[in-house]
Length: 158
Image 1 (cartoon, rainbow, N blue to C red):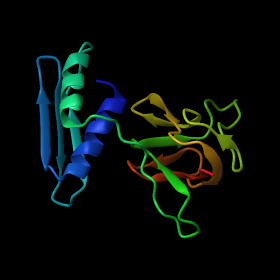
Image 2 (spheres, rainbow, N blue to C red; image 1 turned 120 degrees about the horizontal axis):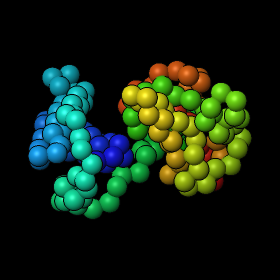
Image 3 (tube, rainbow, N blue to C red; image 1 turned 90 degrees about the horizontal axis):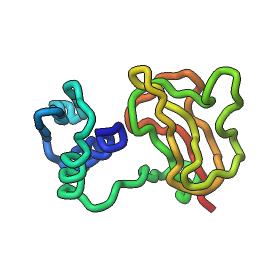
Image 4 (tube, rainbow, N blue to C red; image 1 turned 45 degrees about the vertical axis):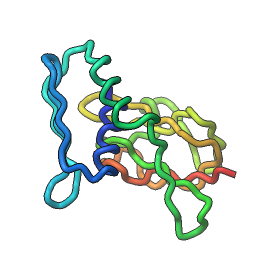
């Protein structure tokens, strides 16, 4: 089970109103539940590779298509899209300290463009855009901690 599949499962649980989901096999134990405050709490046991068939079955039974990063209204203009963090971690604007930033304000991006990386548990996860457009705002400072679903960028899709 990779990080994107776990993120998709967490998003599904959050939107469905289900209070708890558990997946168990001989190689994997995963539990996702909402706490009393309504915030998501996630816990995983050590995972061995080759759990792909289990994950595909669970995801295909729950919904047919992965969700896009949610668009939200901004106070400036309703057509702007906010790209949010899919995971908790540390936000970095560049692939390494000696490299240039992935993007700057005013840059045009395409679907699949790498916008930043978020480090989680010593893994650097590239965050790709699911939209094409122009970067209007960068909402997080480099090397700052980010939360799940925290706004990172504002994009003008026109």
